[in-house]
Image 1 (cartoon, rainbow, N blue to C red):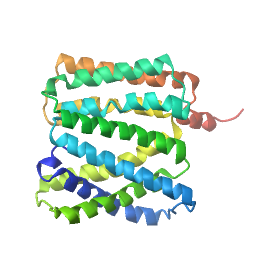
Image 2: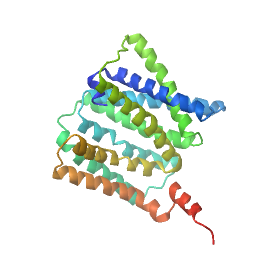
Image 3: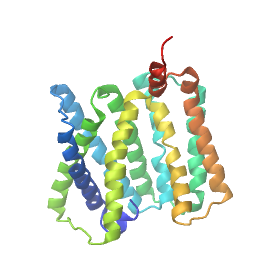
Length: 280
């Protein structure tokens, strides 16, 4: 995303991502013969979900424009903290000591991971990125509470299709629809759209449909650690002691968030394994 923003303004980049994602998923929608929900209440709730989603992506791009990736990682991954605070009263999920400790330890790991990349905090960018993290948490809880019966593919396809409408309206008003001819931009756009925005979010909603929101959000803390390893392997970025310590803390936090459910065997995937066992 940071590379893409060096070519075009934030809202233009978001529009490009949405348009390409819709173009990729639309044929799949028809091939799989997906059908939209008919219940009016469900459709209204899906539209609200779509508006929340496009707001999240737009705010992330706007915040990332004026901040480095380290600051963005720390602020974006305050989302599990918001989820934990909201999921207990709203979804009545169990607030265990292990989960609370896991989220705290994992977030501390993200902070340590990003220490070398944090230079300064612009107040406006901090507010924007924190708002995007809060909306990300709200979106997860909203889907979990009201729309978990909807096919994740349909829900996300609608998020992209409906979310494209206000983006196109903005583009027409601002007269800001430019498409760079750079091959590098095309590659960045393809990956951030098809891989992250389209496929990645369908997987996220699928997991959210079957797992507790607190467990899943805590597990997303692994993303900065993966980014650290990819930067080391592909970009030749250095690995210092602080980064390795932060990565270990993050992985430890994720373990604590998930260990309770693993011990009980209560997750969706544990249930699938149980069903697959042959009967005597």
